[in-house]
Amino acid sequence: MDRLLNVTTGVSVLLLLMILVSVRRAHIRVEYSVSWLAAAFAMLVLSRSRPLLDTVRNYMGLPDSPLALFLLAGAVALIMFFRFSIVVSHLRDDNVALAQRVAMLEYRLRSQADHES
Image (tube, rainbow, N blue to C red):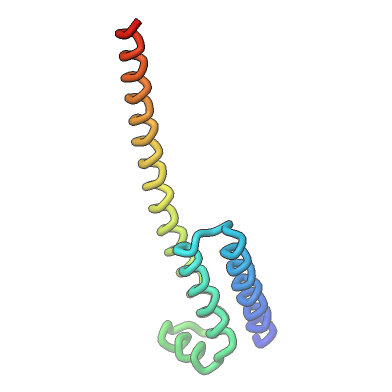
């Protein structure tokens, strides 16, 4: 079990580094990186703090501490993916509205050009 928690610690540290590098290179916006950083940091803390992880495990009624850790990580990932789905949906709606506005402006320009000639 300690080996699994050590692997989880390594994955958490790797994820933290990847997020920080991505923010530095502007591959991910800061407002989206905060939730990823919080999730990776929480996973790191839980994988290194055995008493805290055991408390969470007892509260959840699970037989194994790493199972509690991965269940929490999976739940957080699902919540974050849902949040990003909402963001993508809003961006799609904004793109449709923008395309419609551009089409209306093009129509007006063509109409004015036709009236002037």
